[in-house]
Image 1 (cartoon, rainbow, N blue to C red):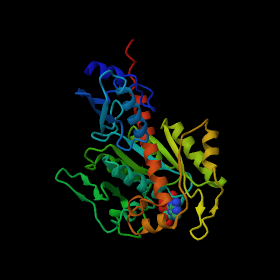
Image 2: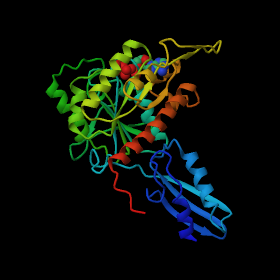
Image 3: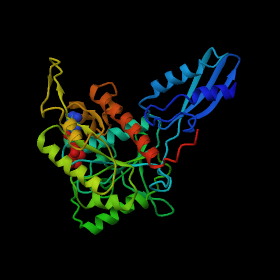
Image 4: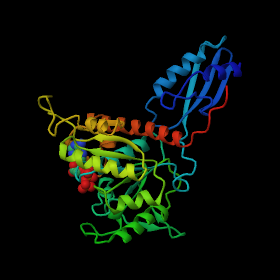
Length: 353
Ligand SMILES: Nc1ncnc2c1ncn2[C@@H]1O[C@H](COP(=O)(O)OP(=O)(O)OP(=O)(O)O)[C@@H](O)[C@H]1O
């Protein structure tokens, strides 16, 4: 019966990885007791965007086995990593970049990190925006100071279910950082390698805007899983975003997708939608690079700014608002793209039929 159930499950493909759940090692348990199938599926991310589809497909397949009349599915998750993890214990490093400043890159990075953590993933957030570190403030820990453990490793600060490190917790607030390229290179290296990150499914890195030393440093220091590009819809932002995409492509960093922030505004009094900066720019940008994934559109929403200022990202403070829902969907889409990316990088030949 177990074999028959496994055979049925081997007809179900992961909708994103396009390979069957059995050969992907996603079926941890497949038993039949009486007429009941008891199945445990380990998803490739707890934030799986297609969980409902997989659930329906597994149920349908199990019910084709003679003698099975009910199906119970338990879901777990095991985030995959490339053949060699980017850092010991850290499965995926995702950089969040933008061409222009002020497009909401740090807001998107902090909300994505919180949404992934909320889904059950182990998440770190590194503020590599060394010239304008805002993550400490956005995470409500502006006054915290970074300490070292017994091994002289920096201890990331715990907040909102994740761990983060920001230059904002090293320097007194409001003080400017006057560093040259080599110093930045070593600072970023230390934040990555001399910190006690522990076991992480995703390390989200908030980059400074543009295409400068920090971005180059990072692409040279570790094997990044990929980059997320945040842009607003207007032409000047898109021009700069395409420069950022070009830089990552030249450094062989895969583009996991584009997020269009401040896409539109819904007036709370009238319900009318205004495309303040235009709309659909990210779509045009995606097409100009031959069809990059679009991870989502985030509306302009006063609460996103207020929550950031209050130190509690919107996906936690106002999870039901349209902006938070859009951000949570971007996090799921991103987690799906990361699974595809790490899987593509670790593809072994399919067994012969
Ligand atoms: N969708 C949004 N709706 C309303 N306000 C937003 C939204 N996204 C970001 N903001 C606000 O816009 C401002 C700039 O955002 P943020 O600091 O995240 O941008 P950034 O691209 O990281 O900037 P920098 O280039 O300075 O690092 C912040 O006050 C933030 O709260």
